Structures are given as C-alpha cells and as structure tokens.
Image 1 (tube, rainbow, N blue to C red):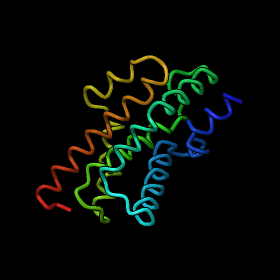
Image 2 (cartoon, rainbow, N blue to C red; image 1 turned 90 degrees about the horizontal axis):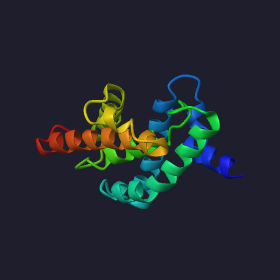
Image 3 (cartoon, one colour; image 1 turned 90 degrees about the vertical axis):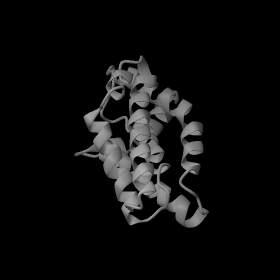
Length: 155
C-alpha cells in the first residue's frame, strides 16, 4: 500500500509513464493544475511557494520509496520533482499572462535539462532529496530570471 501511494505521487498520477518526455509531461501537468488554481481559486504567483513548501516533504518521501522499489537512483517515471520545480518557476512571475506562463515553462525546462551549478551538485544528495532538490534549484533559477524579466516589462 505504501509503495502504491508513493508511486502515485512520484509519477504525478501517471504522468511519469508518458512514452516520450515524462519530465515535460509532469511540467505541463503542473501548469494545468496551476492554471486551474489561478482561474478558479484566484491564486497569485507567490502562493505557489507555499504549495511547494507543503508538497516538498511528501514528494521527497514518494520519490525515495519509488526509486528504491525500482532499484534506480533517479527513475525517469518520477516526475513529482518537475511538478514542484515548475510551480516554483511560476512563482517568479510578476503577472500571469500567456508570456509568463510560457516563460516559466521554458525557463524551468532549460535549467532542468542544462543543470548549471549547483543544480547538478544537488542531484548527488541521497535518495528522494537528490531527486527533488535539483529540480527545486532549477525552478528557483527560472523564477529569478522570470522575476527579473518582469522588472523590465518583458512580458
């Protein structure tokens, strides 16, 4: 039962099983949920920081349990880390419009794939912490760039 619950969270309700680009599928699912929260819940960008803070511990647990069950350090099916990183990236938007949504997505995916220092170093943390921490840092980088470009009214 514990492994099934962890797998459900870690794969973000099956998004991790996407045949091509499971990380991108996880990011898009995160944006879909964020859009619903903004559209129907009136959420502001910074509120996603609170969501990330609340979801981080369960995400680390789920990623760790799933990785151990699959006997892999960072299984591709684990995409909850992309969800958290994407929400953190979105938190950097000064305003929410098509450009900021697209910018948050592209910037997060760029930093997640490129893995500049210290993103790559955070992958070395043990278990679920390493799986999640690097994406949180990639999301933070994306949020900072998005916030700075917003200061110059680029979106």
